[in-house]
Image 1: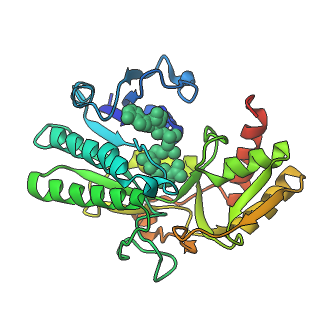
Image 2: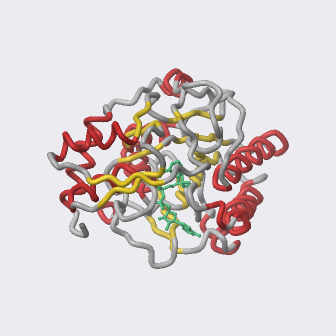
Length: 312
Ligand SMILES: NC(=O)c1ccc[n+]([C@@H]2O[C@H](COP(=O)([O-])OP(=O)(O)OC[C@H]3O[C@@H](n4cnc5c(N)ncnc54)[C@H](O)[C@@H]3O)[C@@H](O)[C@H]2O)c1
């Protein structure tokens, strides 16, 4: 085996796909997720991975989980961009403070690396240029983005002062199989399900908000590769590098499903930046990678998945 990987939040949408890829690459994988979490995303891996149930906010659970681990993937988040401003104290307590506890454990340990999933959609705030390069100023408009940005800064400090190896992936909007269509994050599965069952889609603003969407397997390919990466850059944008407006997405979904979406437009929200498209040149060059799945193909695959799951 090439090494032991621990994935905090490994039972979730992105984490479960990372498990698939790391196993394919020959790593030992341990998933750490909440007590009694749904195993649906990792059920197919039940004989191939180790599962630890615990609370990321519990120092003892955290310490125990790290025993014998080489690589740590941090994918736990207790908040979402759109609602994090309702309770920034909770956001800081559960995401920032717990992450600092984790970094404290990793400091001076023999762990080889931590890979942190940051947010390409929120850390920059309103962009001054499109596509947005990694060097762009970071002025997040939501607590979720501020916490991601702050964790990035602590990682820099822990590396500089204590030699902790890390990679930050500023992920745009991943979508695809296993993303929960009943969740409040992820417009692709949420819109598709609503179209399929004839439910009204609510859009904040006039639908011109443009975002960068990346098919999950394309994103995970870079996330997993970052384990073996040892270059000087540490922060990478991870997206498709092109943007689609909500109105364009609805049109594509109409073509894909053959159903006419019912859309209700509501007042725009100040925290939604008008456009966010990432410059992915650095990830392409560094990892010898580029996204393979076009947006239309990704929508088709997600549509097939949503049609087939039973809880519609
Ligand atoms: N999905 C996106 O659009 C997106 C975009 C950019 C960044 N991210 C980041 O990627 C990471 C994973 O996102 P996801 O979409 O897979 O989310 P998800 O909700 O599907 O997965 C997160 C997992 O973390 C677990 N978790 C939450 N709190 C925990 C705790 N206290 N202890 C143990 N486990 C806990 C959850 O049970 C869940 O299985 C998050 O950090 C998120 O901020 C997501």
